[in-house]
Amino acid sequence: MSKFTMHILVCGGTGCISAQSNEIVEQLKFHINAANMSEEVQVLKTGCFGFCEKGPVVKILPDNTFYVQVTPEDAEELVKEHIVKGRKVERLLYVDPTTEEKVSDSKHMDFYKKQMRVALRNCGFIDPNNIEEYIARDGYAALAQALSMTQQAVIDEVKQSGLRGRGGGGFPTGLKWEFAYKNKADQKYVVCNADEGDPGAFMDRSILEGDPHSVVEAMAICGYAIGATKGLVYIRAEYPLAIKRLERALNDAREYGLLGKNILGTGLEFDIEIKFGAGAFVCGEETALIHSMEGMRGEPTTKPPFPAESGYWEKPTNVNNVETFANIPVIFLKGAEWFASIGTEKSKGTKVFALAGKINNVGLIEVPMGITLREVIYDIGGGIKDGKKFKAVQTGGPSGGCLTEKDLDTPIDFDNLLAKGSMMGSGGMIVMDEDNCMPAVAKFYLEFTEEESCGKCTPCRIGTKRLLEILEKITEGKGTLEDIDVLRELSQVIKDTALCGLGQTAPNPILSTLDVFGDEYLAHITDKKCPAGQCNALLQYKITDKCIGCTACKRVCPVDAIEGAVKQKHLVDQEKCIKCGACMDKCKFAAIIKE
Image (cartoon, rainbow, N blue to C red; front, side):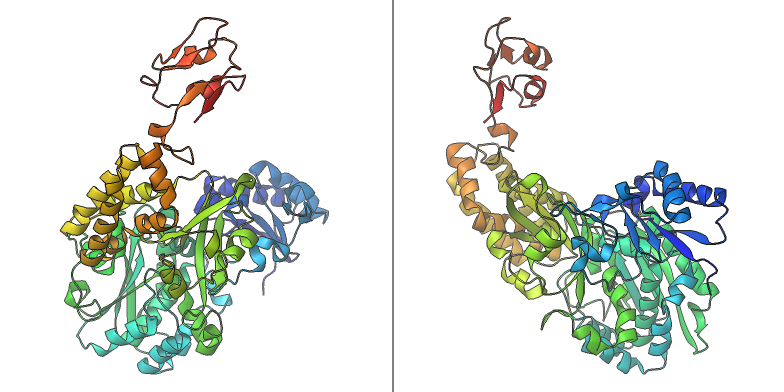
């Protein structure tokens, strides 16, 4: 039993560490020692709490007080007031933006009320570097239970749960395991895809940083189920903290007899090694990932054969992503029926989303399948920043599409998002407001996919380049009406003929924005105007009659595009102007406008 009567949990995710959470931990420990309370109070660095907008977060147990935007300088006051005197530090409490009331318990915050943490169950609660804390939360009990079952019974349990892969198209996880189990071979492999590459996505990274043992345990269960003795985690090298904590988890699991030979005295042999990726988006596709692990170019191959038949070194291989694996232990601890009771008919369980963009509560959230976009954006996300009007949300990253106000009451699940022209993907959710230009948004995603194309197949290698060129023409005011037809036709050809998911889904942002925001494309082409005022080539900076001729704008212009004498109204030479906005920023009289 713990000797401590109070615990101080400090967010130790990448975001909060960049905002000095390590220093907060050290300062808290220093002042706890100074108060002679180190025998009673324990300071722990945990994983991500999810509420990234308000980080660094400090949570105090057992009273569950939730402090936000804490700095190292706040540590002394927290110890002296809360720990020693039992008085909450009011200025560090969360303020509800609607009621303007201070909220001390996260259970009463809108950000958490509608969440259900399954994959994230231990993130922000345990020390990810301490295997005993994971075990105290029933860690590795699911593995012990699975090892008492037959391999087919383990697979059937996963199938009955209805768990679908959380990394892309949502293929049934149990069925995938069964394929690998039924393909006989002298060696099989379990692969964890931790190559998360969508812009704005940080779900898998946060799970590995906050609860690495859940993935280790799940991979061992999968290894037993399909008959594999070797596991591999393919993770991008840009995730140093996740790698460090995963390495610690693997070493501790081996030391405790939970990896290696004769696991839990059952004769099971299974171990895991880490393979590093260089950050290629295409390596999120399982065959490209496998080739990369084999030391070859990360290029996809035509399926079939699927990895379950011929994968890593041409042996049967099961590939799931981090979030998929994180759900596995819970399914065995609480039962397939319990898991299947959450979500919708065809999309069971919860989904983790990285909520980002023009939204008040940026963060990592986990919600039951079937929750609506409106609930996510306005209840959990706190609405749009600066009171702006909601315009669209991009789900599924570069492979997804834009959903608009008419879609806000759509229940979120795999099939509903596909029907709306988007997809679940790994879980990136980028919110946009009235200031976002939709042709420019499509161009942003095409720039990404064109850059990340492996170049193996012509439709993706050349097709995405041609699409990007057309979008550049349109956003520069050089497009024609024929370009719209070419965009649609070429997009469809690429979707039908590209080799892998990267190419097949690359046109999605174009097609969805064309369908819903076609008027913005037309405005760029026919009116040579960007309605959102974001495309520099179509902007004009003009000086109004408010100008008093102070020459401040003229002096700051880097290309001498402003003309006019002292105390006389100035003019902008549009031919010279490079649309940098320096003049507008410098003017103290609001005499310069952007059209």
